[in-house]
Image (tube, rainbow, N blue to C red; front, side, top):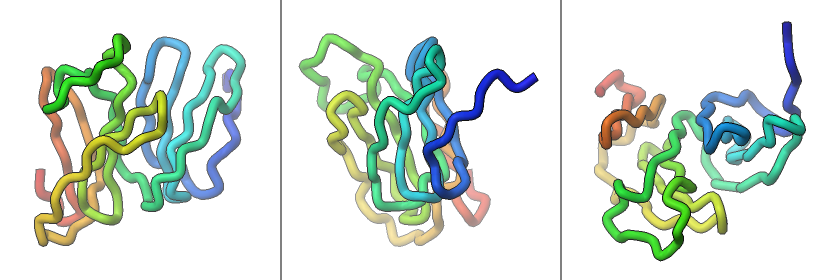
Length: 128
């Protein structure tokens, strides 16, 4: 049984990650990241990122090189897509805090996974 339909993306939503127990974050080919309230089944905000979002995952601030001053350690998303680079955005203020330097590989990022303080990325040439 379908509990709810969340409407906000204009192209396919490709990736999902939980922000907290009541908030979902989605990314899609419409070049935006959307935060959703799962209790109200409502869109919280839309963040334009200007590239197809193919992989997205929430990370704790402990993974960041520069530690944030905020007390909330869990509002950072790592995402990547057709540009082939990883980017980190603070979902509280919508500011991008890191962009991976271009490597010249040229393949899009298809999937991002976070587990045990590590990021795993799969690129369009099927490299892990």
